[in-house]
Length: 433
Image (cartoon, rainbow, N blue to C red; front, side, top):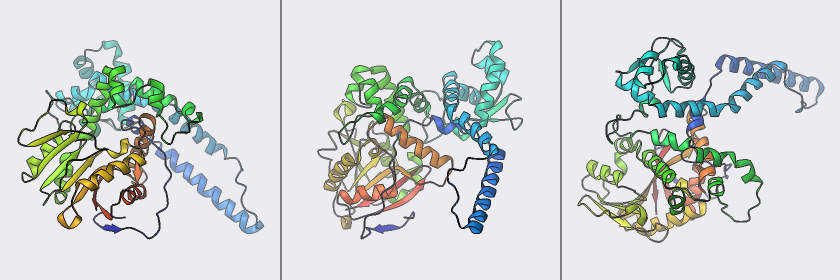
């Protein structure tokens, strides 16, 4: 399917995609891309020549190539470097976490956009003897794209500036974001690189070996920590950790929504009423009303989330359960919600959404903002796949490709859908009854 085009259901079911899984907060390995472009070029050239030889041998002998033929020495040497990279990706993640905990992005921002190593040592109150070690840390983070070298191409001279990535990690005064519409993502980094998340990921092999007959087995996170992420059980057993992950969830959910309102304004034009399902603190609903004052917004979330919130004349709050009933509206919005849930649960949620909206001719639709696996090969696709496996580690949910989304919509009784636009790793859907 292509953006801007509507799609009728095919007469046969689309092929099922490979189903891997992930956690919403597993960003960290994305920042560990240790690029080896020259080596990659040589490696690709070696593979090309090898394939040519195999084809020539097959043409002359009529025999298929031996698929068990060992790699060349050159290929194995480069493979060894790849092995080191994969084994040490976590070091980049921990270096990334270290920079965030030290406050390096904020220090560079406060220094006027560039900072030398001595500037950082002074601003962060680090022992002067740590300057050579800080240089090594920053060299890795420049290479992985977290920072940029302001004065050379290697980051070894010691003057640094922010990249778009590190702009997202600048902590402003109070709750105000430094970049409009993109709240600080520090909580996302701290949760994704936290001991609790890493320990859950370290249990993957044991989790795979365990024979659990249930259709939706407990996640590795649940098995390791005895609590369900974003659930009351987590708040009871680990209140401080629960706070960290919920702060990360809020930062993750709110990031980029202002861009959605600007780039996909047609989605909200003409809508008279909207229910933001799992709308949390109402930030998204308030942003919608500010941009489109004619829309009457309701936020639905679990009672523990809604708490004592009451309607303020701009947004109405309802404590409830989206699996049981959703307040009626012309449109229902699910923003970064469904990837937390299994396919079976998603169908139940979407079925309730369908009950809450009018027919398509009366403007009824469900607005879904979520990740759609299928970006071109590169960092964006890697981010989507990491988020999928992260979901597998921490929840019972998953990230989905377009075929997976289509299957969910069809099973829930919807007749049509379109992808309005793809924004980064996410897409904006309209789904019609």
